[in-house]
Length: 167
Ligand SMILES: [Mg+2]
Image 1 (cartoon, rainbow, N blue to C red):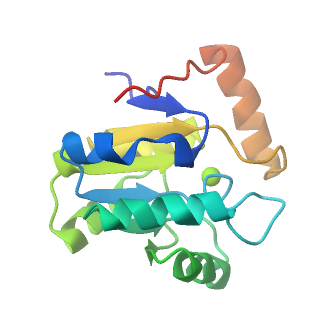
Image 2 (cartoon, helix red, strand yellow):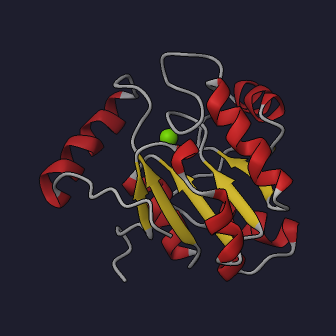
């Protein structure tokens, strides 16, 4: 398994089939904040993302925001609005925050999935921790300058993303 390769690629978080997560034994969903839940050009998550996270929890899966964003107040507010717990200063692609969250929820790597919009942070962190990863398209064109560079590198090296919702 390449450390760069996500388990699945989906256009948007709310298109991930919740019943498939349950069926494949997921007990804990770790989710990135910026441009995964909350667009970079907005301060709140769209209602469909909040509703999807409600459905995930209703299915018995714990939800936790795992964010690299240094503005921890913003991250905590978003997590609260979305009904999620939070691990901030995650330092992805280093997998420590993923390990920390798994221990916190008492789940194994096989029971954990990490959802994010960046191959070079979210996907690598998840793969290093050996959890399943789902790569979503960024919600907004706006992003940090170095993230925009990473996205260009990703497109050059890996080509266009091959979306596949089947789980
Ligand atoms: Mg992100």
